[in-house]
Length: 255
Image (cartoon, rainbow, N blue to C red; front, side, top):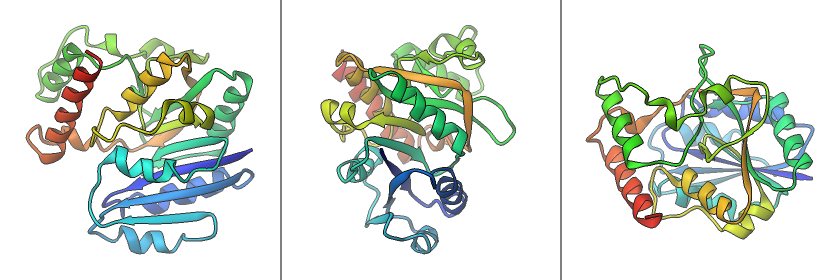
C-alpha cells in the first residue's frame, strides 16, 4: 500500500513547518509520497518548504493563486498511491488518525472518502462533516457571521454523530482532511476547477455518491485544525466573493 498526500500552501509560513513535521512523523511507517503545491505565496512559505524537499516530497511552485481545486488537482494528477490524503496546511496530524482512517477504508471497499474529527487547539470540535450546501443553510451561515443568531441552524451538521463513538455516513467531509480511495478518484475525476475556493469538497463527494461510493466520518480519532475560515473574515473580500461565485456555480450545477 502506498499513500499520497496533497498539501496546498498560500502564505502559510505560520503553519507549514508544524504541519509537515507532524505529517512526516505520522506516516513514517507507511510507504508514501507528498506533493506540496504552493499557490503563489509572497511570504516566507517557499523558503520553509525548500528545507523539506526530498525524494519523497515534491514541491510545485505556482506563480499565482490558481484556487483550491486547480492547485490540488496538480497533485492529484501525479499521485500514485492506493489512497490519497488531502490535507489543509493548517492541520497537525497524528499516526492514530491516519491508521484508523486507512483501516476503515480497508474494512469497507465501498468507502470512497473518509474523514475524522477535526478539533481546534482548545479542543473544541469543528463541524467538519455536513449536509450538502443549500441556499437556506448558506444564508443562515452569513447571518451568523454578521452576529445574527439563527435558531435551529444545526440541521446542516452531524453534531450528535460527531460526539458519538461510531463511524457514520455523511453527505460530505470538508477538504481539510479527506482520505480518498484512488479507485474512487479515478472514477469520479478530479476536483471541479470551476470552483476557486469552496465548495469543491462538497461537489466531489456528491459526484462520488452518484457513483455509489460512500463518504464516512470517524469521530473516534481526531487531528488539530486551526481553521482559518478566510472567506468569513470579510463578506466583501476577494476570497469571499470567489466563494460566493463557487456556491452559485454549485447550486446551478446541481439544480
